[in-house]
Amino acid sequence: MLTAGKRLAVFSIREGKGGSIWVRAGSAFVNKDGSLNVLLDVLPLDGKLHVREAADKRDGVQAAGGRFSSEPGLESGLVGGHS
Image: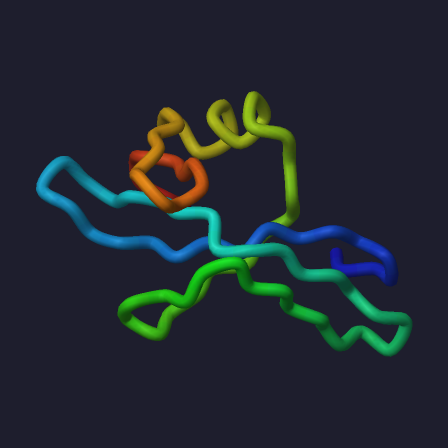
């Protein structure tokens, strides 16, 4: 459930030869009225963003069943499918 003050993670999910590549694109915060403020560090190439509850990297890997990978110039992202 989205409640005021909740921190969310924003991802750009790209399809690669080995599966989906999750690139951390920024953060989002839930306002008192239920609206969102989205702060992007990068822009998605395909114009699509995925927002989910933020977790530390260790929790994110276990929840998504993937592994973290990094690309030059971009923050770390998950590699693997999503639910």
